[in-house]
Amino acid sequence: MVGESMTWVQALVLGLVQGLTEFLPVSSSGHLRIVSSLFFGADAGASFTAVTQLGTEAAVLLFFAKDIWRIVRVWCATVFEKLTARSRENVPVSEMVTTKLPVVTGTGPVGYDPDAEAQRQLDYRMGWYVIIATIPIGVLGLVFKDQIRTGARNLWLVAIMLIVFALVIAAAEHFGPKQRPLEQLTTRDGLVMGFAQCLALIPGVSRSGATSSAGLFLGLKREAAVRFSFLLAIPAVTASGLFSLPDAFEPAGEGLNASGAQLLVATLVSFVVGYASVAWLLRFVAKHSFYWFVGYRIVLGVVIIGLLAGGVVSAT
Image (cartoon, rainbow, N blue to C red; front, side, top):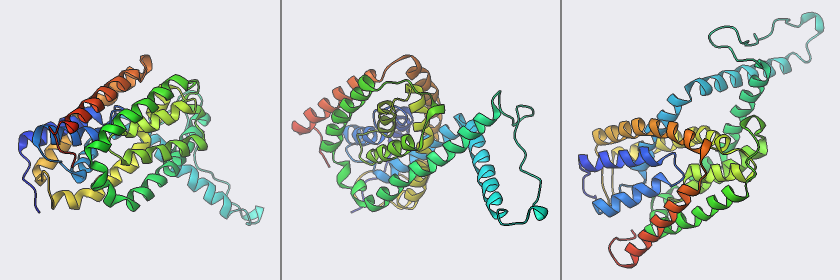
């Protein structure tokens, strides 16, 4: 059964909600599910959510462009250098090529600041951490894609996860040592945060909330956990958005169906608002705790449960 067409007001509002909530530990997918049902009487759908997330991830790419480009460049150069070195292991010394890849220094437009070698090593490790940590959500996302688009969007589940995971975030804030900077990130940290990211497949959990909480439990400083959370989300969210494009442009089933133009505008709105949200959140977590979001999540979850119990909104 084909659902009703989305209006321009709905597309703009949902794009705004996506941009405002994507990077906050409050669950953007949960908010889109709640707002679309509460104010528009139908679910905008998982595909719409995934596609508009491309806008917020573009905001991350732009905001961290310098860091991302440096990490990608150093990772590729270092991997090539290591592969080349291995291929020369059995070559006679007299036949070995003596030239090496140039070491990037602090001089020049693409150079590094003071400790160049330490920065290179960190960038190389960060590249691997993001790759390794993305594998779990990639596998689980494909395995449970049908459940994610149907049963997982039940508002009872969304409301409960808002409350339950608020307690998890509060525990991470309370018990996490918050002493280690980003430079001390390890492979174990990356894997744990990668598996934590899988919880974000359930609307109401929050990708940034799950990964940042895992980082706090591991002893990372709040800002370090949030920064890696942003970087970690890029491959998974981008792949999810691109994977969902065919379904979003050829909507079928109940709910709100957006046109291609509406999807584009909603994604652009989420990009602009998302860029401002990234900058704000990084400044906020440098001086404030996650408890502010914990209280908001609990209040919202309780309100939604009350509306569901009173029959004001439908769970599906």
